[in-house]
Amino acid sequence: MTDAELAGLPDAVQRYLRFMGVVGRPRDWSFRVRFTGRFRMRPGSGWAAAESWQYNCAVGITRVFALRIRFAHLVPVYGHDTYAHGRGRLRVKVMNRLPVADGSGEEYDISELITCLNDAVLLAPSMLLGPATAWAQVDDRSFDVTLTDVGHTVTARVFLDERGAPVDFHADRYATLPDGLILARWRTPVTRWVTAPGRRPLPGPATAVYDLPDGPFPYIEGHFVPDSLVHNISPAHLT
Image 1 (cartoon, one colour):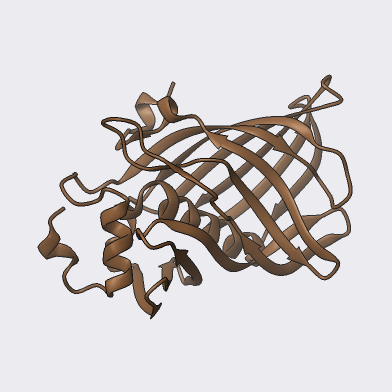
Image 2 (tube, rainbow, N blue to C red; image 1 turned 90 degrees about the horizontal axis):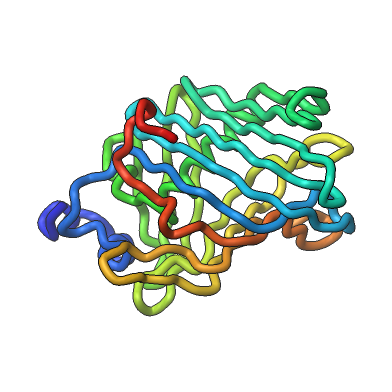
């Protein structure tokens, strides 16, 4: 990627892409990353240790996310979020055997596409530099980004600091709660960015939050493992 290739984009988007280290690197088409932290199922419930692996690909937008949670440090619960061919799906199994949730449909299609957009904004923004994405400046510190795939279109607002680093991402997304689905504002605030020598900027402590009618509901907190982030990797080399 070159500075000339960014010239037609809004100023705020250009500052963001330069901060993210897009210029001078090949355009990304996939990535794999591990996340460690904690997770909870519902507002007011306790936290459980959690870790995840995920793989995202822009060649036919695809996301495979596997989450392992240990409730009471004993019982493992496995969640699988997927998005492929325009379809989203959520499956949850206790001990990876007993199904407790299996969701699909329009709400999941939209929600998983929003998550694909969020992943790319924070971890591989050059995946978004194509005809499926539209950018619009809001002001010097924010822009809207719209992604279209298989008839679905989603939009998010990205907020920046003075460097062009993302500090928050807002979109309307369906929360999967024990009582069912609810459409709510979904946020992924980033309090700090880490740049190790020779590496791209990586979100430091990260969280995902739903703004529910009764108040904010942060449901996952933790950090991406730096050495686990690999760009432009084929599914055949996932180990």
